[in-house]
Amino acid sequence: MTSVTLSKINKTFGSTHIIKDLDLKIGSGEFVVFVGPSGCGKSTLLRLIAGLESITDGEMHIAGDLVNDLPPRERGVGMVFQSYALYPHMTVYENMAFGLKLAKTDKESVEQRVMETARILQLEELLHRKPKALSGGQRQRVAMGRAMAREPKILLFDEPLSNLDASLRVQMRNEIARLHHRLGSTMVYVTHDQVEAMTLADKIVVLRDGRIEQVGSPQTLYQAPATRFVAGFIGSPTMNFLPAELLRSEGNGCRITTSGIGELELPRDAGDERAGSRLTLGIRPEHLCLEEARGDNAFEIVNVEYLGNEVYVYLDPKDGDSLLIHRSEAPSQWKVGQRVALVPDLEHVHLFDSQDRALSLTRQRQAA
Image 1 (cartoon, rainbow, N blue to C red):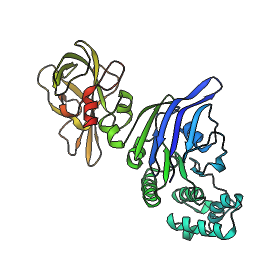
Image 2 (image 1 turned 120 degrees about the horizontal axis):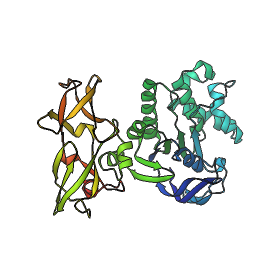
Image 3 (image 1 turned 30 degrees about the vertical axis):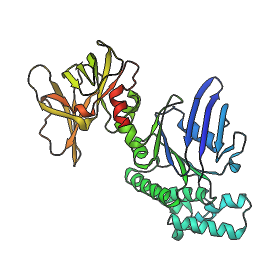
Image 4 (image 1 turned 135 degrees about the horizontal axis):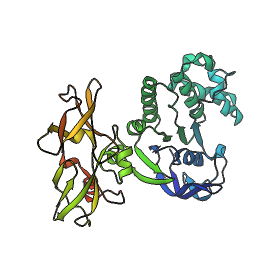
């Protein structure tokens, strides 16, 4: 098992600055997932760890050793790419043994490593097949096996499930999770799919424009996002956001007013914010309750999605571009065209300042 330490890492391509002063520690045996929107630098960061791209500035240590100038083959990493990148003319066995043969590993050791890896990935019966005779999931396991057979210190995954259908992605997520628990090795995984991140990771690194927005466990990022960006990116359906104004903050409580809901008394303070400050209230769909509308504070239901075990109710946001979402167990009494009042669970609301940073009520919940 091996740790990775990144210190003030920068990567530029010409005048384009991709990775910006990035600091990160990946502990031995951790499963770390990089997430973020397209172009945020997550795949570039993975390639820097692998040695497939050179570092413009900063230092990288693997197992305590400086590796800035080491080629990929000397870093002790194995990489599974988005495309399987299998040799079509070789059998499964030959694909998995290829890297070992290039490293001039003796024949007996090649046989031993390939067979052990095939046993772990349940590929023993497929060793004499060629890639064209395999399913997508089997090809992905072979690509993983090729990396594993070299017994790397770190396994790197670059969006390995993006080419698979929905049901196969679920199956492969479970196989990768079981593999990590069985091997206990350090794994770094890149994905744009936050569901993969939430279900696989010990630690999630949320990237935005080449910088780290927040690092934490899936539970921390979901329950106590540090910024509005993280709050909106983590969670499906996404968090609801409403413009708000701070009326009063004193002691351990504050009062805000929100368009369409009215005044709310929150059981925590709002930090150093002053009365009149423009804020954003965030509330997840499962923490937003609906009631029959009474008076002027009403939202119109524009769509109802029945998903079998749960229902999503979409509401006209009035003052925003994104629809508001209520999530509840099926069945649902709500219909398109109804006007309803919103009642947020005050124990689970989030407040963000004008710079989109979480205020003290979410920081206190994280500390608790």
